Amino acid sequence: MSEVGGFECRLLPAGEAVSLAAVCRVTGDQILVTLENGTTSAFDLSTLVADPHMPGAVRDFSLPGGDRLLVRDSKLSALLDASPSLASRLESSVKLIALSLVLLPILGWLFIDKGIPLAAKPLALMVPDSVVERVSKELLETVVLEATSPSELSPVQVQIVESAKREISQQRRFNGNIEVLVRKHSRLGANAVALPHGAILLTDDLITLISDLPTDQRVEVLLSVIYHEIGHIDKKHGIQSLVQSLGLYIAVSMLLGDVSGVVEVAATMGIAPVLMAYSQEMELQADAYAVCELIRNGQSAERLAVALRLITSPKREAAGSSLMSTHPSLFERLEQINALATDRGITELTRDHPGVTGC
Ligand SMILES: [Zn+2]
Image (cartoon, rainbow, N blue to C red):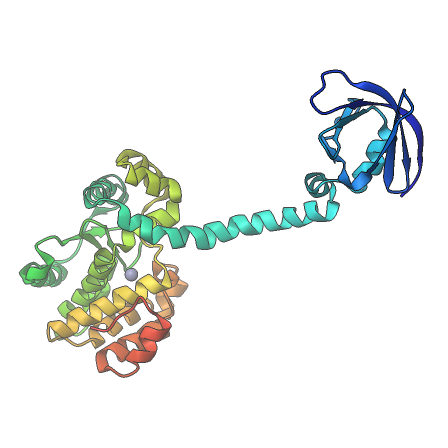
């Protein structure tokens, strides 16, 4: 520690209103304060607590015992800032500043990447069903129907859809809550979208692909797609996806029952990023749901595998016509269907994907 010769300072004794003129001197690790009456007190520099440094202003140091030292000497400030308090150490450390410049964006990214998805599920489950229904119906009216046009399917293709719809309406456990719509959309490609309140949108392109299959497979393959979408509805994936895509603001808005704000934000983003941004885990859960429904209805789980192969064929992926590219790999999904359908590998499956359960 360097030496700083005598300089004027003032000592403000604890509880007093008037400070006393003094001469301060730094020697070694100590500061000596000599009052006009000749008494000298010594304090370890490390025990001085400085107020934030404002250049030009008198600096106020707290001394052990409650006395305060008032100094207008920049040399002392420089000396003390070499061994400052924790707060000023943090402020003045270039390394720490650099580190925080790197760390803050990472922490922010981690919050968005991990924190929001983690929070999305519990928050989504807290949103009252009545609000979910209102948001979903508004989304259907203002986002989905606006972005699509009436279906232009042939009578044969319409027949496939009608047969599948009849089958769904006859299944009592859906309580008539599932509404299947077919619409034309140039960019969604062969796809299906589930809205949280129970509407399922199928695209003309999807039905066209399915209508190329052998006659005896068509309805069941379409049913497997619809079951997959019902799986998303059953597990409330739509609302979770909304929260993940649009942020926690949306969750709070929905918890407060503010539907219009949610729909407004969703409308500016479009259908795909909002209702189709499902995680890999969600897709596997929806697949598992579909397989269980197929088996329950005496249909082959292989129908879902056919549907997935159709939708994710390399030709369609390359053409960018399918949003299924955000889904887990086709291989992984087919493996799971196989495991669920045959009971083989089910232990392994549920261990790797705890959210996925057997039928
Ligand atoms: Zn899906």
